[in-house]
Amino acid sequence: MRSVIQRVKYARVEVDKKIVGEIKTGLLVFVGIEDSDTEEDENYLAQKIVNLRIFNDQQNVMNLSVLDIDGEILCISQFTLMAITQKGNRPSYIRASKGLIAMPIYEDFCKKLSELLKKEIKKGIFGADMQIMLQNDGPTTIWMDSKSKSY
Image (tube, rainbow, N blue to C red):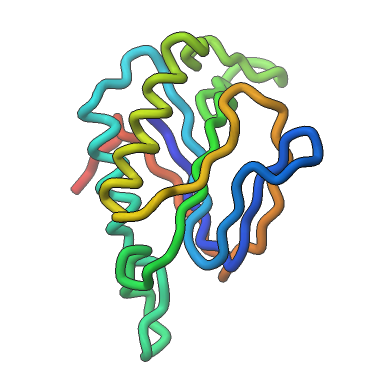
């Protein structure tokens, strides 16, 4: 699993010009899934994301997590995170799981985030053409891959 995590002051996702998910201060999480992803990958990323200390403390140092600030999470499925770009100029998405495999993993991942955050997270609609609006805070953007664990 791959994810791009953005610290935001505001984020929302629209489908067909209707807001389907919206948060204030928190994390906008894009997640890409491949066939080899397991529950271990889900657990690893979910734990890392909710405990990631990228919010400022009183000394203006990135030392607080989304849990610490009682923030929110908006999670969006994004198969393009699995793009292969080494050859040519047109990305290949062959590594990205098809919907029948990816959708239950995405839903389970969102459930894990919600359990760890101890509140409902907001989501996009899997497979939909989504429009994302956000105000990145910092900017602070982090990339993680569950297959590239280095502690």
